[in-house]
Amino acid sequence: MAKFCIQCGSQINESAKFCPGCGAAVAVEPVQPVPPPQQYAAPPPVQQYTPPPPKKGLPRNILIIIIIAVAAVAAALIILNVLGEKEEPKPEEPPATVEEDTDTEDEDAAEPEPEAEPVFLRSFDFANSFSEGFARVYLDDKWGFIDKEGLQVLPLKYDGAGDFSEGLASVMLDDKWGWIDKSGNEVIPFISERSSGFREGLACIWVDGKLGYIDKTGNIVVPPIYDWYGWTEEYPFYEEGMAPVCIDDKWGFLDKEGNEVIPMRYDYAFNMREGRAGVWFDGKWGFIDREGNEVVPLKYDSVYPYSDGMAQVSLDGKFGYLDLEGNEAIPLRNYENTYMFTEGLAGVYLDNGQFGYINKKGEEAVPFIYDSGGYFRDGRAWVRSGGMIGYVDKDGKEVVPFIYDFAYEFSEGMAAVCIGDRWGAIDINGKEIVPLIYSYIFDFSEGMAAVELDRKWGFVDKTGKEIVPVK
Image (cartoon, rainbow, N blue to C red):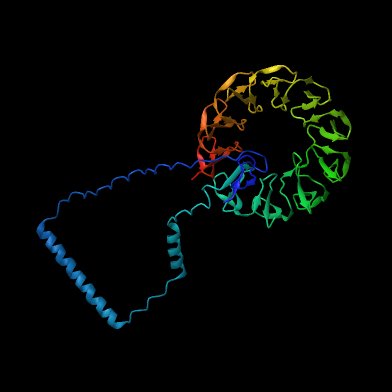
């Protein structure tokens, strides 16, 4: 049976200690405890029939007269019937009419038939988060899709599958990728060597190792002539109408018609975010705008894409943040490391290793008293102190106690948490909604989360109910 990374979904060998896709450690999963037998309610007692009391009878002499009269009439009718049979032969019984057959069929149809067993509503060897109402699942070496009731909507027949995006999902057969719609129609042929989702109406395709772009009708908008390297941080998706591409180790940008709008002159380029893209040339980083103007000089040792109007930069071992105009809104300081801004705050490490959060003015928002932390989502961020994890709000108040060994950011008001080797989920108030009984749980997406136990995957909703049981 194939084994997959619980972090990124990459397939890994049974003996591997680390995922080849993301480098995450491969967790050892304990044996699932046997659930107690299901209890059934006793059937209701059979209702006893009580006959009604006898009614008062007629006088005896009158009753005898009536019986004699009825017997005489019956005898006369029998004699007449016998004589009639001798005079005329009995007609043959007519064959059953169509109407009689229809009535019989209607009677049969009226009887409720037992409901068919759902195609799924059972656990899988792997399952991913819901996207556009569908979740890709893996069972017996094949991929397919289920809906939120846990029923099969697209059969398990593919060798690989990606999530639905913009109404289409990439699927693989015979080492080639194509795209299907939500009815399972194969709308784009199996021509690509790699998987890609759609973004802004276009998806990446790879033919003979070269990158191009295809639209949702299967029309190749940008021919596959560009280079792509597996070590890049992200696929060169179209974002804000532009995509970074590379030929002969030089990077530039295309528009959605495939026109080269920024020349191929950089050594590397990030995707366009918030009207800015990080570019690298001759060992230094800066930012360009959509017209290719260098709005931030190429002078930094590292940069990260813009997020929440701010971008992380470093120079000579110091870290700071730029605003969209390229100003150092938070001057370079002796931070040990920095996070991107989310919800107006960014996590940073001081040079002494202590962790806290700053606002866009560089002011301390959450005290630097923690060992590490995550990003703010839904007004909460996980932080670690003394080896245990809790959550703080944006005022620095500790709103979830420090009782967890591992935890993730909130998603849709829920966060995955772990004590020991058991995972579950809490709400933003710290209330345990999904019990900590699972070997792993993904983030909530579209009201559902994939859960794993004893290498079997199912789904829970935001009340903790198993919609697709893990068994």
